[in-house]
Image (cartoon, rainbow, N blue to C red):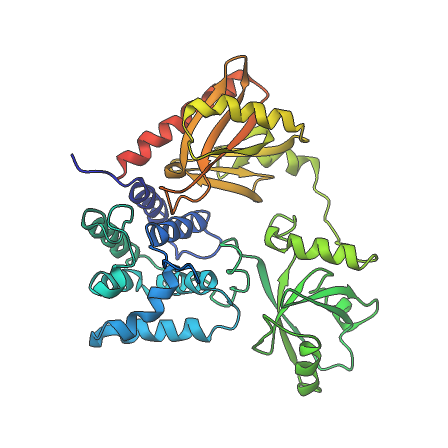
Length: 427
């Protein structure tokens, strides 16, 4: 009996869910992040690392070598996409460039073409281990390619300009264009950190305040098409000086996400600003009681309201035998419980602070076990692989939750357990 690859099942389920929507797939599609996550895990799974360990291989490294290693004359579109990725000034790491390329490849319907060329380039394909990878395993590579061909029939319209946080996350910030007339002073106080330009204050009575398009905590991503990722001190002022007297067009990255909460990848920078600039503060919108009461419903799906008690690493084995030990270790930490919403979907489990702010999500192939504590059945936990792309060397984290009722806890555990079978069925 041939071995199954759960990641292919998860990918198929995700593609089928997206395929059900007839409209073009945009960055706002609820399944997009899951799709990109699964693709990335597959592309990373089984990559052999150099013996000396002086650098770490990632899937982007073989992608950028394809034009040199594959002499096929039909590489033109792929080569142009690779050149565009290299020319993007908003991604600085191999991870960021790989993610930018994946998004671009989905827009241009060339993801399947990319994998096809890899499979016919032995010198690059040998980067993958035949036993642990999808791409070097003939039994898995062909079904994967078939799924990508289905993906190529779908229309994606992803905003490639919104890429300044791909180095850190698949989760994209809210980006908006801000156009303003020529003026002597805009009225934005700037602060440079981590290669980004933050607005720390919008001056009262200034043009920026009058336009109401910028808030303290936002990032200037571009000015008149000039990308400012990895900007050094006073770079924005230099660009503005050259454009003096001309209309200005800013691409702003807002600290506020779609639901009004902080865009999570920006949080470390904002915390540093609050520490270094005593007067800096974010302006939050208050949420009505009615909106809060509706948080448990999302797209007509019931979300479980839970207490997230914390997580602990349980070592190299994540079976059900370690769940009770993991729960006990978390309880001994005496952490403050966090109110969360849990969405148990067909292919993954999503944990949210509210109806849109995702704390973390795990696909069923990453989850090793799930169960309840016998003496306190409202408590339940599941173990998840820390590095699912390297299954032979990964350790496991045990995540612990408490429900307000044993009935809900029973239902959640049963649904996650059923998820294992559903994911396997999709293969």
